Image (cartoon, rainbow, N blue to C red):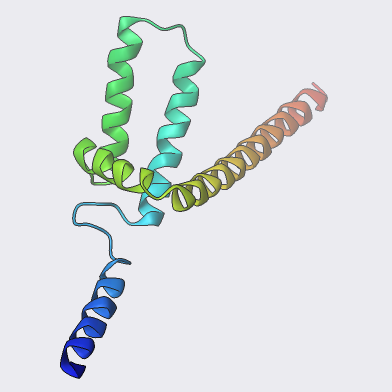
Length: 128
């Protein structure tokens, strides 16, 4: 009887340890956050344009570029998204990270725009 309890305990421990592993073909969390960030930027850009068939085709190309830049396929992304969708707390945490990354990108962009405007202003203020 003690041997059965011991084996069950070992089995439970092994199962618990394996539950922290990602299934094969699923992106690890940080890489998924990076991909989601890039896809969100593309979604934002595309939503600012008038929808046409050309935009739909270009959108597919933009997404393909993101997958290529991250060395993944759409199938890997879809499988990862499906997996993380079953982990709502983790997915919510990941989207919080995406939001923070986007806010940082926006701050950097705004800072660059400010610097360009200052240069332009200084150039216009020079005597001719």
